[in-house]
Length: 578
View 1 (cartoon, rainbow, N blue to C red):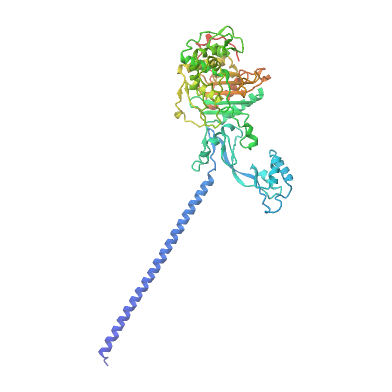
View 2 (tube, rainbow, N blue to C red; view 1 turned 60 degrees about the vertical axis):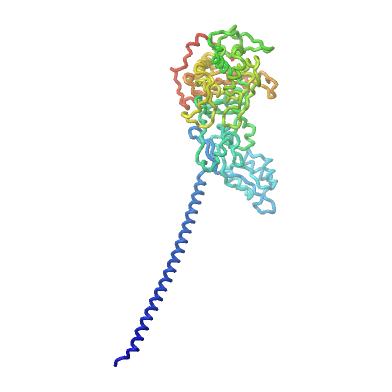
């Protein structure tokens, strides 16, 4: 049977329509799935990006924290050779927390008296009354900074919860009191006090530079030798204090700077307050006959002294009702080399008189004797400087080191100019590259400096500086013993109170270093053959320092070399003065 044509056509069209609907539905489903996949991918990528961002940020923070933990809170200070002089280290402190057992009730298990007594047994230098007062006061406070682990264990054994041990970073000075006046110390607030700790405070705490040590010009070996010999000199003479300096004559670097008595910057304020005064850079003294070479150099430069053989009267000199005299009778007359060898006030005063007040004053100004010493330290003494025009008597007394008071550091810088060819350079506590040393300013002609080197060597070979001579080191220098001025400016205290100084340089054929040794009120003792003057106490100090530090500083003893003094030797007769 054949179907009807109309029915067959309708059936085919329906199937085609249904196929189109399925295709559209399938396409719509696919598009929806694609959008879901794209959305999921977008959110997944966003999540991963955020996780990555957080991870990188955390890593950066961790890296910064780790780097900061590896950098000390305060930069190290080292000597010129890298030896640490000051560094930060983790330590315990002893903290009193009265609320450790709660806000109410007694903060201590035992009585405050018992705890104070026990703490003093552990820390003998702890002040009992102060500690007891703090325990009774009931306020949180430090009882002690810088506690050793074994000390903390002993305190812990007391069984007092209120005694706590917070870990802190503290300043440590591994060499103890060495160069204490150069370094200073760090106070409890974390800031430097005195010395280079104060000067460098911002640099040492700068986050960008804390990992970089600061090298000073000091040589710890030379510093130790200087302090050791000064201490010996103080003990031998019962002096109340001492100062010493070693200075590089070409760069102005301070190789050693000592003031005694000293203090240990590792200890508390009570141990150091009375000892922090710096005699080398802050205290001014009349330094006596050590000034005579300055006068002779200025006179040679000015053409006042042209012939060293010319003789001057050595009889007591009366000026304006004042008599200038010498420590001994040196005969009727002396020439310039003899005047320096015997340390004659009379002859030096006459030369100063011929030089004149204005030229004498100008020469001292050129050496910086009218201003605070040039050094980075905050403790710098201002000279006692005669104002206005200098009358004749003032000029004459200044010529031999009286009537003008300066620091030992002034003297060291001045002697460097005397022997280095005539160039004045400022002193510094920073390590200096010799190729970049400051140019300085000329204060003496090279020929004048060469002549002074001869004269200073003669003083050690034939005069008052004999006890400073060190075999092979060709030391030259000048003694100075001056009565100590009264604190109220009312003249001199008494003849028993003197300042004894020896100013030297070595080796005199090619000077490298100036060495200054000073004793404050030395006494006549058996060690000094019953004498108080520089020839017997500070000259020997220099004589011991030079052979100790010379090889450390590259100066090797050589007995076959010396400054040529053959043209001066015929002019002098051997002898000792002050």
